[in-house]
Image (tube, rainbow over the protein chains, first blue to last red):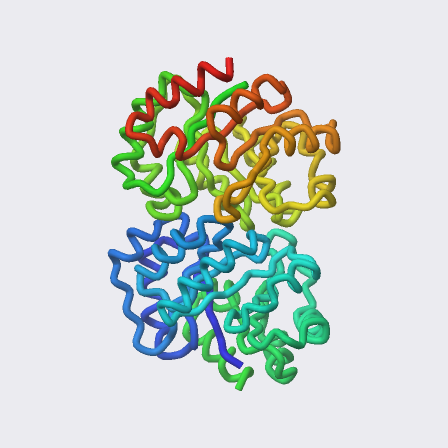
Length: 207
Length: 207
């Protein structure tokens, strides 16, 4: 299982320093929606972010205007962009097409999405489907049980990521479960005094 | 009925000039999601946008982290911010609270939202509920019939806006229908060679 670290709600300068420090350690570094909406894609493009080891994900959370947002998003050098599962099917088709043409990836954010909608969009076979517990909905997310049930209901979905307040013990269970390709961790790494050491701890338990 | 003009997918300098020109004419000027995601809230705050007549709406399309996004959003001087109806109830509660405390408004974007979810969130009585046809879903949106049906199904919802490729004749019908508080027009005004004259034409037919 791979590890994605999400960086959110910090000044851009701090986010960029943290990215540099985490680049040799984790598989994917995410600049979260807060960074995208605070600083914008034009600024992120102008920063010419270069990562040696990790892939870059921008959490665009596209709801509409898929082609426009994904073309702008990939112009920053990002490898993976996100779209909301609650978008129209046409929006998801647009962003999938843009990503495939550019040999990039999309992550479909399943936050607050019902089973019916998941079934309708489960045919985007190269997409990463992200089981995502809303931050605002608070604690009480049983990541492993949710992931097991999701896999049972949607065995056709190949690429699964899991996000939402994941801690070290949850990450360990998810890794041993062997269903999800990737676990996404936010504040438990990027919100710590020593993100590098926190990231190393996570990498250890998911091997 | 009031008129909101949405400005999208143009350089910020052009958007700011268009705002200045439309300020004395229309009720609400929207900087669309493309402007927010391209330039970011920090830049929009630093621009110190000042409108004399029109209210300013930023189409944030918040999906999560409601308190953070709305506090940042209102720091730009915006009067109205948007949240996706597909967000968790907790997210909508957070943004509603932030708006009420700041004597501002929220617009709940109903794009791709089913009846069940609308019922669950119809108690936010000071919110504007926006019937919104996805741009990516293409043409074929019967704004007047959709609005009439919406009002019949949700008579408890007081404040209604309608968006999605609205043209002059649709705006006229919506005004005579007397259900929606506001019509939102994008490219039919801001995408024209002479947005001021286009806006005046719309203002005339909705009086």
